[in-house]
Length: 80
Image (cartoon, rainbow, N blue to C red):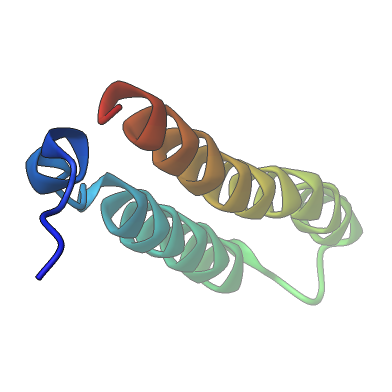
């Protein structure tokens, strides 16, 4: 029976990427909820503001996905 190297025995899977995913999803959901509550279909200025806030929704999703990848990568580097 081959023994495992000491470094692989010390590796612990970090839950940080999953936290980033769920926190990002919660932020995205809250932002979409804010858009729905704020939307007044009869007011063109509010419609435009809500439409422009879609940029923020995309940024939240990008940070969620990118942040999880960065945290996972850093976790793998630190576990070495």
